[in-house]
Image (cartoon, rainbow over all chains, first blue to last red; front, side, top):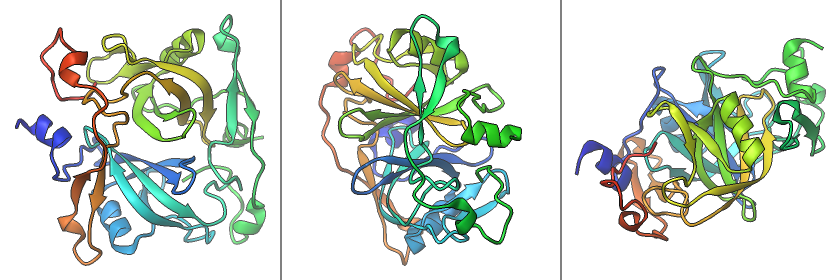
Length: 149
Length: 149
């Protein structure tokens, strides 16, 4: 098999990373499959995730490991890890404690696009979920930044 | 509101793109929420998707628009579009015709990681799905490349 073919149809883990050594991670609820968040890992973060069964990402903005829930307590217990055909993206099936989103929503995907085919440029967002926790309560030690890691 | 706060808690579409003008797209089955694939779009690809209700990505390897299913017929009819807190990722809820994956699987995530906490470096992949179509039949005009766009 060629390298590409082995990567796509083989059983060896051969992650394809970007220029920063990262790949995309989609965390989904292990029961409902609902998408909770999209983030990034490098191989070391994946190894930590595997070893601890707690989702550990690489924060691009802070340039360090980011153990999900280390501040908020809203950790993700990893049940399964799936990988895509060309091995540049993984899906984590997790048990999410509390809220995945730092804004207090269960999922970071709490807004839906509303549009008309006639005028795509005028598309707007509508809130389609309610917060499950108060972010001010979850991050009491820090001024709530309203930006994701 | 600050720019970050408006992006996270407002109703205006204000996509945050990478250096190539791209953001991450997760396509999920509109009925089951199962993740089908991860790809990328730029704003123009999103506008085409909105206008046509057919998922249109930006192919990074080919550097052109990629209308999902244009060759295979396995198109994605877009039902809903959700956006995450910092607007650098979207979820498309789609009705997938046939197989999302060019390897013939319903989802590009057809392999699961198997590991032991003691030796994460020895993690291997196991196939956990069966193809729903024969890729040789789907892409008859081209030598099957075994690489994703």
